[in-house]
Each structure stands twice: as C-alpha cells, then as structure tokens.
Length: 306
Image 1 (cartoon, helix red, strand yellow):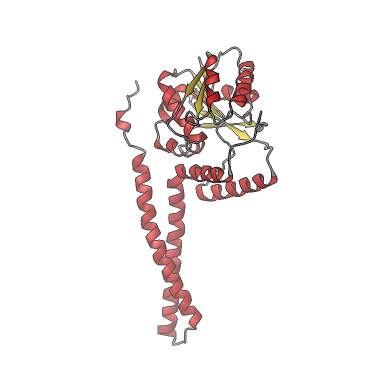
Image 2: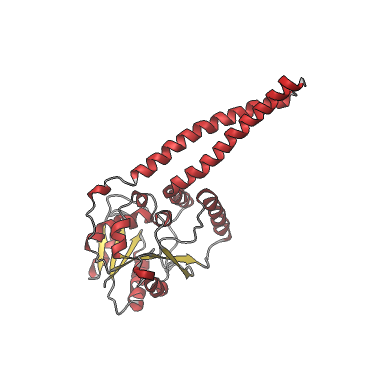
C-alpha cells in the first residue's frame, strides 16, 4: 500500500520542506509519495528545488486555481496511478495540518465497518487564530448551518482509500469545493479530532477577499439543499401574502368596515413579496433541476464494476 500526500504550495516551499521531513518521521515505514501542486502556475522558481527529492512529484496547473481546486486538479491527475488499496491524504503545506495526526486519519479508513469505504476528516478542536477571525468563522458556521443544515468544522485535511477516490472525484461538485463536496455527497465520514497547528514559516497568503470567495465556494455544492430550504421560505411568503390579501378584502366587502390606509399598503407589500417569491420559486426549481441533472454528466462513460 502506498500513501499519497497531496498538497498545494503557493510561494511556501520552505514550509513544505519542513512538512515533508515531519511526515517522513511519522510514516517512516510506509515510504509516502508526495504530490506538490505549484499553485503559482510556474511563477515561483523555488518549486524547482523540490525536484531533487525522488519521492516528490510536481504538478503545474496552467493558472492559479486556489488551494481547494488545486487539490482536485492533482487528485484527478494521479488517480489512474493510485491503487485501490492505496491511501490518499490531502492537507495544506504550511503546518496548520499537523503530520502527527496522520496515523489517526489513516487508521480511521482502514477496515471500515463491514468493509465500507469512508473518508476520514480532521475535525478542528482548537484554532490558534485572531479574535476577528474566530468571530467571522463563527458567523460563517451559523450561516452555513442555516442554509445547508450541515455543520462545517473541517478543511482540506482528509484521508480516503484509493478505490473511493477513483469514483467520487468524478462528481462535478468537486469542481467547486473539495472539502464541501465531501460533506454534500453523503460519503461515509469519520471525524477525527485534530488540533490546528502553527505555521512553520512566513505568513498566510489568504486575504479577506480570498477567504470570502472560499466561503462562497463551500456553499455551492449544497445548491440543492439551499434551493429546497429557500423554496419552503418562498412558498410560505406566497401563502402569507395571499391570506393577508383575502383577510383585508373580506373585511372591506363583508364587514362593511373602513380599511385603514396602512392595511392597504401592507396588503400591497405582501402581494409584491408574494409575486417576488413566486418568481424565485420558479427560478430555484429550475436551478435545482439543473443541479441534479449535471451530476449525471458523462457518467455513462465510466467503466462498470465487476
């Protein structure tokens, strides 16, 4: 069995060198193979220094992909060479994903209950971040939970068997977000408590803009769940607006009472909201339909099992 270590590197070669040495210490008996994605697309000349390591393969995408899509790019490149009994580990190269947690992740995917294949995800138990980041992350988790019904407490640090990777990585949701697609596809998951480590060197290249885009991408694989929840809200708004209009009309026609001006404006506003809700209902229904259809794109070209 070969353990494949897949990590994106963005102007952080020195951190990767430390990461590699510590992983080799942890997995000294399994001789892991490292797959480095140059996410600068050839702009970082230091990446070439890694070619002196015989256990390192460098992949260079045509342009910057970001760490999530860079991982998917690399995984799809290497899966034809990965054996079904091999293990694939994905993690960041800066040291925040600790090599000391690797044995726990790998143990979690070995011999699952009934031989069931699963993904081992590192569940963050502690973060060494600024107060501002912690507050923003808490708000994002609340928003994510409200829109998708799923709690997110993991990142790129994951392990999966090669046989599972060969199948699930073809799903188009992975084009959007690696870590989020694992949660969205209902793949069997075992969460492994892991404390977040400290960066080896330098400072994070993740700006607020990139972090915001990362958060939006994490929501995209859950489009169907978000659509269903939104449909419920829009239908409720439509029904409420119609009921308010009927109540006010009934009071004016049958009770003979004068309807206050504010009530008329309230009904008008409710009807407008109802029409907007109806339009959103149709749009989201179409989006939901397309989302379900795209998951079958080109699936007939896959080889059959057994």
